[in-house]
Length: 191
Image (spheres, rainbow, N blue to C red):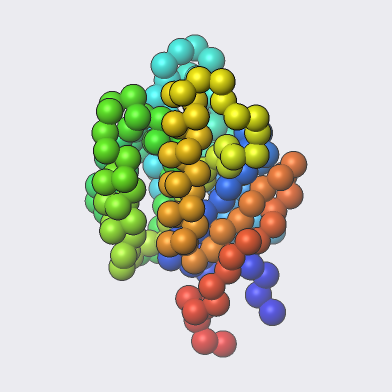
């Protein structure tokens, strides 16, 4: 029986977790087919982060160094739907890291969050390549002190629910350990 976290990837996967839960590393291994060893497959990394300060620039460089040469990286802080559509190539998985920073960028740019989510979900229909999304689970902590913090937490929760509804596979990472929350079997090829 095929393990739920090996190839072939479903059309859309969502990897959720808290800060420093191991979600990015797990998603990278999932996208390249190296979760249980093996030769890495080429993949596209769509980065939504912007290096606004030295600490963030250092994090971005560390992520790039960890990924290595099998990755092609593009940076897309806002137009995520367009980047996914323009870069979907059969046989090359896409990893989007992460929806949380994308949402933050949208809020900062004063974009319509619901419209952006609608456009992203529409972009996922019939893609030639599987897509793995990474997102932070922000609803398990304390209630944010500021109204902006609460608005962000609420918007992130809505986006995560929307993406989980659309995703064929949803995995929650806690302390580096995966828990498969959803796995639609319809995408699997016949044996």
